[in-house]
Image (tube, rainbow, N blue to C red; front, side, top):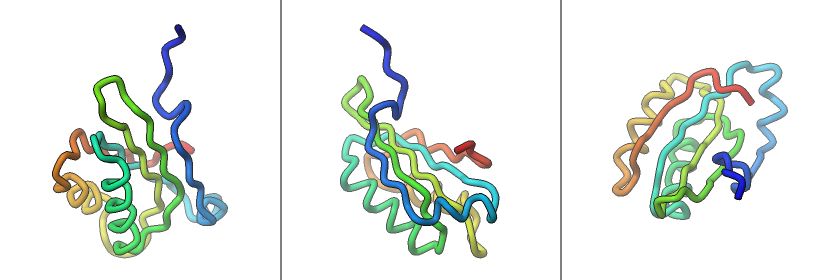
Length: 106
């Protein structure tokens, strides 16, 4: 059986903001593990919205340990730092291994 890479078969929800990345610059990615992707993805997206960042996409893939690896791509616009997003998501009960990738390749 072939070993599957994360996000090879995950859910993907692109947004209209993706077309703007050519002009605006660097896409960031926030990655985290969660046992409850529906709850934590919705909450993370709400934080992205409230911070005023441009949403680019979301991917979630089941891992071998009964959790999901989630990746949220965004453009950090406005005055708040992307690190603030990582700090806020890391406070969600059940979320672990929060990682911010600056200058994520699309």
